Length: 330
Image (cartoon, rainbow, N blue to C red; front, side):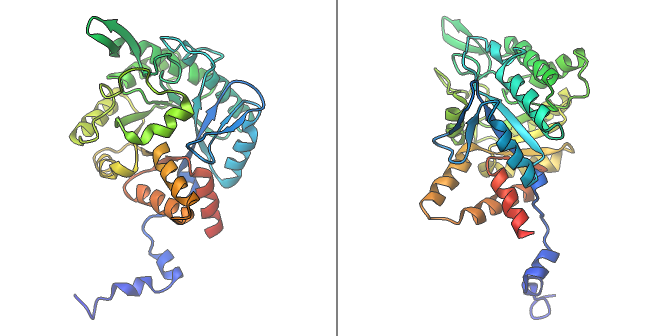
């Protein structure tokens, strides 16, 4: 039937009616909040390019965790920024590494929180790459296979510290299989892997590299992160991780890749995460500080769009604010 029998506005004529027929419901339980842990004491340092996001030392992180939990956030993603680096990122897998210390502290304070450990080497290597670098006559090469053992070692160390989920972000071929084998051999077969399965070589990561002190010292990451122009490749990457034992799949970044997110949701039956990354956050914050946009409305619309596109969970720096705004609406 057509107009005038069909009148689609009938289902929009009041706030209560719109709420009744709403197809996508965003809640605080959808959010994973990133946290940056640094060595030292008494540190709560705002990251210049990410207003409202801080570096925390182990003694100052409790207040942030309390605020997250009070807002209804149930999951955090832990990044560590070490005070020393070397060629193989040895502090990534050290028992007393900053990520391991952070995981233990969070679990001590809030054992019910789901603690996800970002598993990569870039923050911990003096060259800033996500794997082992070999210097050849043709120049430096990021060695895929030599990197796998260190990534597996890092994952085991993080899981032993108490991480509930391991989230490898390195994009080396075979990383899920290597980490799954390492966890299983260590008696940690119960620990799931949230794979950064589809991670693009993106310009949206700029503020993160300041936050994590992880900018590469030479070259770029285009030989292991994906070309933003490709989508069939995303399906190959995701399928490989499924075959190797991933328990979650992730698309990173979010906004420019919602088509990819939808494809993964339609193709695979694993839970799908999307990362609302630092550059996306920074752009909203910058515009809001200028008074050019309504920050609350933009953030909730963006996060709703990510969930509508297929995300089962959203890693976002807006997590705490968004959860509070949703609570206020409720």
